[in-house]
Length: 203
Image (tube, rainbow, N blue to C red; front, side):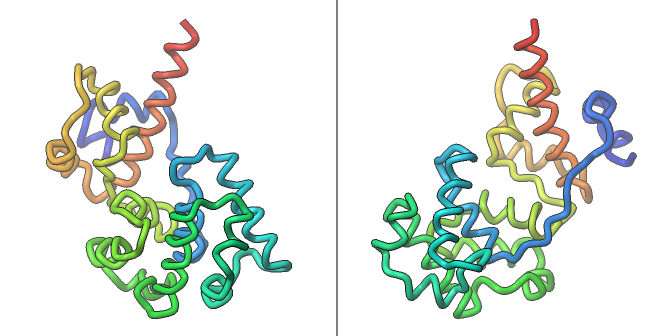
């Protein structure tokens, strides 16, 4: 594997974790953003429950259409457990989908990573990290390193035996050696952090 050849430390993580099992995403950017907003600052199970109640407002639909969501009263959406800020963010996702800022999957696939991020961060409640997660897990981009992610920085610290987490700019520069497979490198840093924590608990 090219990553193992490029970085001995990452090679050790690959040997410990085994083959990469990163799943390819197939959903729409609109749905991925609604899910991401629901998950912000909420435990995963609670977020899934909230999303379930949102979908229940629109019987027979996996997700409401953007037009349906925009037309739904804020109070109705709040009954699903969404905060006012999340209602506003979800409605902005819907509105920006309708006006073409949030393009469909095919449209975003034609843009490079920087252009996708620029479009998405214009949406209320969507920051760079959320845009990078969409690149990785919805658009299946192979060369994304979300250096602002805690798990990435802490995983690097654990794998490389550092006393402190690397600064994002430094990590971005270091991670250039992992191109064009930085998404896979990120996956291994996340998984190594889980492994290291599990090893610590078992002692």
